[in-house]
Amino acid sequence: MRVLVAALLLAMAGPSLAAEVVVTDGDTFQLDRTIYRLDGIDAPEIDQTCLDQRGDVWPCGVTARDRLSAYIGNRGVRCEDKGPDPVYKHRRIGICSIESEATTLNEWLVREGWAIKFDPTAKARFAAEEADARENRRGLWKGCFAEPRDLRGWNHNGARLSGGGCHAGHENRTRDKLFRVDTAMPPGCPIKAKLALRAVGYEGIYHLPSCGSYRRLKRANRWFCSEEDALAEGFRKALTCR
Image 1 (spheres, rainbow, N blue to C red):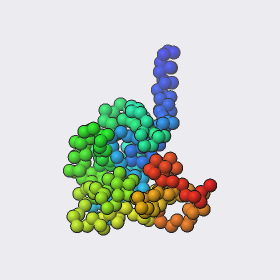
Image 2: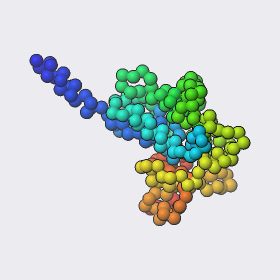
Image 3: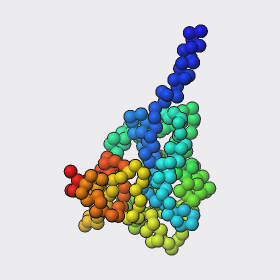
């Protein structure tokens, strides 16, 4: 009888013991107190825009985050910790899965078209999943998108454009839409950032809501959810911030 009662108590406690998962973008989430970036893949940045099959702009970064969050739902997640992220020092690299499922979240995101394989760290993984998503025009592949690494580097002249909606001869028009200077603030990401062209390239400056320059900056190139993310991508804090 005692064993039965104990088993019932454990079964009732099980769901409440699962660590909370907070998805911050299409390939990053916080599991309990640890932030994981999924290994070998690259999802659109939270403020990234893409083109759909008609050539209209849509917030693919926010959508990728929402799809990952909806897929996880209230289910438990387990991660294999692969060590610290070499770029984002406050994050860990992870290979993660829903509890009791064999397919990793890394694989699922690429197969559903919400992320691409990220070489060289992919190490020949996810090629089949990416090819399947591209052939069936799932997720990002239904339209046209710039590789997230090119958005991070603001490489609008040499950006690699992918997807069934990319049209030859329209790259300039496409890049104007993919590298916008008036992107709306993604939910929960209030830090404005502006790129300034210098002799040796672009210099990024971010502005917190408390900065004196925040309201004066009417058009932002980028938006960030945290100062750590802005610093990791090479942006510095505005001098008007205290």
